[in-house]
Image 1 (cartoon, rainbow, N blue to C red):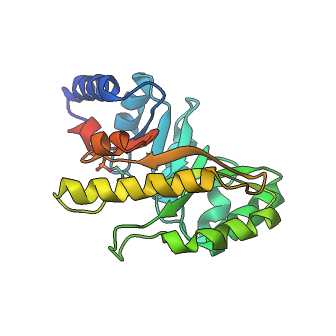
Image 2 (image 1 turned 45 degrees about the vertical axis):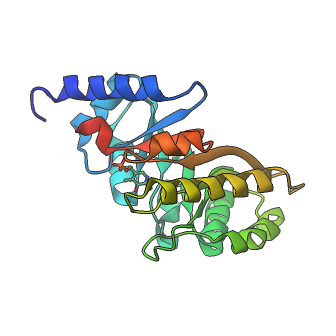
Length: 222
Ligand SMILES: *Cc1c(COP(=O)(O)O)cnc(C)c1O
């Protein structure tokens, strides 16, 4: 870690926090950053941290003693679910029914309830994982069987484009889906409390469109 970096992280976090409306949760995405840099974020009072790879997540969970609320935000392979169930605060990136069932099974084995978000992909970019709007009923219908899962909201990403209107449209549709599910008389383990959208490049737009959790990485460290 370079000498000036603690100061930079501190200043960036102050700026970002000033911009977030009250009630918005900041998840600091520490992927690509080592233990020292991750600890620097924690020193500034940020305890919600996001990682996108199971291996990195486990390493940091093992080596950081502070009471961090870990968020899994990357694609999760079913064979790796067992390593994080019972240890993370929230799995934000549930992108298939298969992984949803697997999280339920592992949670049952460990006798825990796991909070998750359902990830939507409305960008039309097929390298991004996630459900489409039309898949909504499919995952809702199986929730009554999944007693060790709590669905607490949805997560999505904006499209990778400089076109602000296009990004805004995707966030707008995510909010529509969120509201629609929220108004639906669903099973007890379904509640819409968290709308996770917005990253370093587009979080102001996401907030305008109703995000109450933003996942910010590069803007903290650069
Ligand atoms: C990397 C990542 C982020 C943070 O991206 P930045 O542009 O660095 O802020 C947010 N969400 C997900 C799912 C990511 O993979």
